[in-house]
Amino acid sequence: MKTVSQKIWYSLIIFILLSCTGCIETEPTPSLTDVDSRLTAWYNIPSILPLWTDENYHDYYATMSALYDYQTRYDHLIDLFSIGTSVSGKTIWCIKLTNEASSQTKTSCLIDGCIHGSEWESGEACLYLAEYLLINFAQNTTISMLLNTTNVYILPIVNPDGRQKDYRYNDNGIDLNRNFNVHFGRLRGHSIPLGKLFGRIQIPRIDIPIFGFLTNSGRRPFSEPESRALRDIMKDLSSQRFSFYINCHTATHQILYPWSTFKPIFTISSQQNAVFTAVTSWITKNSEYDSTKLGYKASGTAMDWCFMKYEVPCFTFEILSEEYEPRSGGGRHDNLVHWMKTTLPVFMFLLMNSESLHKWEIPLNKPLVPKGVPPVPLY
Ligand SMILES: [Zn+2]
Image (cartoon, rainbow, N blue to C red; front, side, top):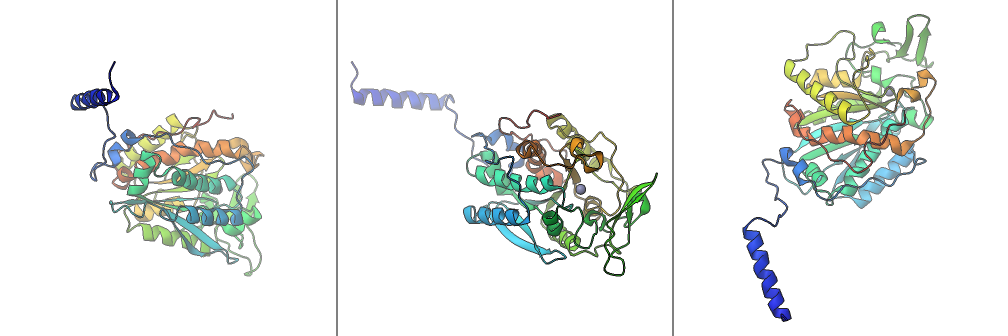
């Protein structure tokens, strides 16, 4: 019979022997130089999902209150600030998520939603992502490393008046995603530079038999305060190792990249094309979104303008499926949690490859996502 002190000695000797022969694994300590390529390897505790319910939609005021709440609970990870005001004077809120205590070199990316106010899920996805990153920081190593090395700028509601009124356009009746200065106001891009008639009358959309429809792009580029605010934050990020931009929408179930105009502004280089192809191929294989459908042609979009101006990878992310597309008779809002889960692989893939995307290198990091993500498709 061994005494207690003998047992302790035996355990200590066995532990030392095992440690020397490499049988006991210890979690690797991150170095400052190879953060990006090793993100996957440092995944430890499975990440958890926000506790949302299907009724948990956030209008403008509920979004604002969620952002305040995040700031109160995670003030070391979040900076909440205004980037401007809407036509009716509502603040356009933005958050910057990052580990403020980390002095590592960081990239900066921008994700926005509700540039079209009736496309609720595009704003919800921004909030869901923010909450997912915040609740997993310091629990899940991948997400900790991500916030140590990335400034994640999230702008949940670009069009506060439209979101509050469940209206695609802003309070001047202008389609903000046609108000950017890239092939602005072209009829072939389904937009028309009308502005407000006599400075008073809104004409958000004109339907023309056979041709289709035209949306009002505003009388001149950046005529609207909301698009100017978005333009200005893109400019700020251009000096902060800007890595990518995602402009979220609903509901055509795809991820698109430039150009959405009928006539390219410049030729996409072979390297840029390889990166766009790598991103969309990964997304097609690992989420229910794809990029194989014919894209629509649109003039004056935020995605095209950002790519033209700053040449960072830019995407239009159409959440939901065509079953929900208003023009096809859908346009409803349900299964919120399901749709939020579908977005996580897309966001996480881009976030985990932020450094590569900044350098236009092929993204190789693969995100690990929680059980049940992506969910089984509804259709
Ligand atoms: Zn849209």
